[in-house]
Image 1 (tube, rainbow, N blue to C red):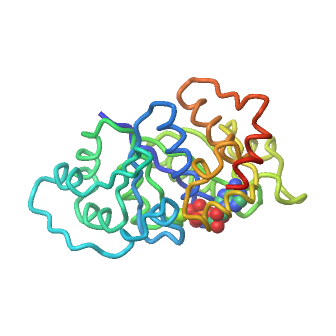
Image 2 (image 1 turned 60 degrees about the vertical axis):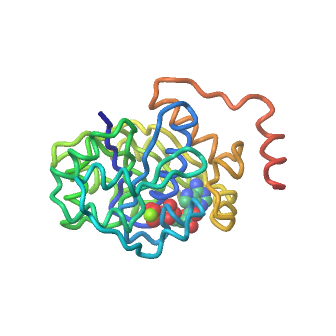
Length: 251
Ligand SMILES: Nc1ncnc2c1ncn2[C@@H]1O[C@H](COP(=O)(O)OP(=O)(O)O)[C@@H](O)[C@H]1O
Ligand SMILES: [Mg+2]
C-alpha cells in the first residue's frame, strides 16, 4: 500500500514542482520507489522538468478498465526509474471522486508525490482529500511564508498530517526571513533547506532535473539530505563535493 504525499503551498513559483521532481529522484536513489503525479495546470510542469515534453500534448485515451489498471496502462516510466502520472492522465483520473482515486492510488507499492497547482480552490481540497499528508514548500519571504501557513492550516483542517516544511531558495536576499522566524510562524521545525542555486535554472534550461545534471550542486545536496531524513538515514556529500560540483557544472 502506498503513501500519498502532497507537495503543497498556496503560492505559485515557490518551487513545488522543482521539489517534487528532485525530492522524488533523491528518495528513489535511496531505494524508495516513487510515482510523481502532476496535478495539472502548472506553469513549470513535471513533464517539462524531466524532458518529457511530448506528454504535454493531450493524448487520446479511453477509460474502459478499472481505474487502477487504467493508471497502470498509461503511467510513464522515466529513464531514472521514477514513474510519472502526467497531467493529461491526471485530468482523466480526477474525473472520478476523491475516494475512488485515493483507493486506486493506494493500491500501488510506490510512494506517490503529488505536485500541487498553486491556489486554494475547491479542486485543491479534492486533491488534498486524496493525500495522506503534505510537505509544505515555502521561500523565505513574508508573502510566501504567509501563503504556506494558510496551506498548512487547510491541511490540518482536513485532518491530514503535515509531514514537513521545506525552505526553498534560501539565501537569495538579505531581506530573507531567517529559519527561526519561519519555524516560529509554522510552529514546526524546518525539515530541510534548499539554497538559491543558479544550477537549478541551468537544469530547467537543459530539461534535466538538477539531481541528474549536477548531483553535487548545493540544491542537489539539499534534496538528498531531506530524502535521507525522511527515510531515517544520514547523507554526507563527502569532502570532494566541492570539486565534483565544479566538474559537473562544466557538463
Ligand atoms: N533552489 C532554487 N534555486 C534557484 N531557482 C529555483 C530554485 N527552486 C526553484 N527555482 C526556480 O523557480 C521557478 C519556480 O519554480 P517551480 O518549481 O516551477 O515553482 P512552483 O511549482 O511552486 O510554481 C523556476 O524557474 C525554478 O527553476
Ligand atoms: Mg509547479
